Length: 299
Image (tube, rainbow, N blue to C red; front, side, top):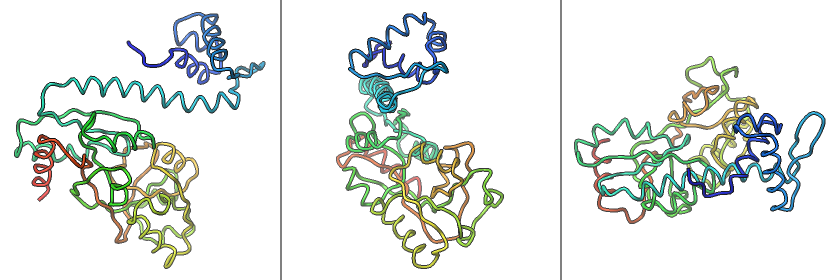
């Protein structure tokens, strides 16, 4: 397989995860000497020490910890780039490339697919997975139509302007709350806002969405017993944090399968957010036809 990055980076991740040259060598089916040589070459080329060698195994240095997170993104991004390049070779102009990630699942859109095909039976689709990171969000949503045509997700005008894309609203998704399956609220099938009293409620920071801000203001003004905890971006780390800390996370029902140890529960309040198709401000003729069909399918 062609790699767009130094393969020593893969060895670095393997060693960091294994905590041992020997275990990393076994996983890679090479000798420990070869692994050590690759790490030494990588450290020499970067001019930093990545591991502390201790009697209990290998420990990442501060430089190693910093590089670890970036390398995971670099490798994932390069792999996605190859996928996008292959998709760009697609000769069939009647293909809609649908981007999908844990926070922008294609399942909600797939529920409409049979209805959409009634209106445009010649259109085919490809699912293009991507990792949900701030960097990917900026690149993908800012360049819709290039490698990915549409992404299904929540949005408002603030986000559309920030990401330089357009959105077709298909539904309004009520805000729900995600909790650990071990949380005291997990036994409930619906929540009243009073059930959240005394809880930490994780909300996206102010000015990300006025729909979230409207809920935030309602809580501050009328339900001060709920403690709001801000975060910057919906990604898997936030879902892990929700499960690990036993905090409550603002979510939508479409994210019910993002984390197996979280339960998404409807809340009896009048707060929701648009859900639909994010697309380029200047969509192709095929995408325009697809958007019209999607709009007709929800009528």
